[in-house]
Image (cartoon, rainbow, N blue to C red):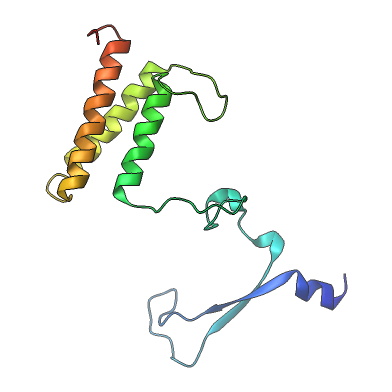
Length: 142
């Protein structure tokens, strides 16, 4: 590989932080530069890319979208909606119970720290998932 080809396949990263890795202050005019080859880059599958491969933007990362991702996962595990991977409705009641437990833990740990709309969303999601879970396990009839 020629030097020109090698330069085209790499890019430069400049560290402009005001401190070193050990926590000491760095001189303001000194910056560390690192050459990174494309093969060293993290793949887009790790979620570091800001947009999807087809050019669509991912939804913002905030508390409501985080809760809604668990809600969707719970609905898939309860067989209410088709799995995004297989396209078929599949049930895993024990895994859905685990998802409900995670949301319950989040509700307990964030008590008093959420906005009213976030608290209401979490409460509604938990209520709905619990009712569907109880219906699937024949504890109640809806």
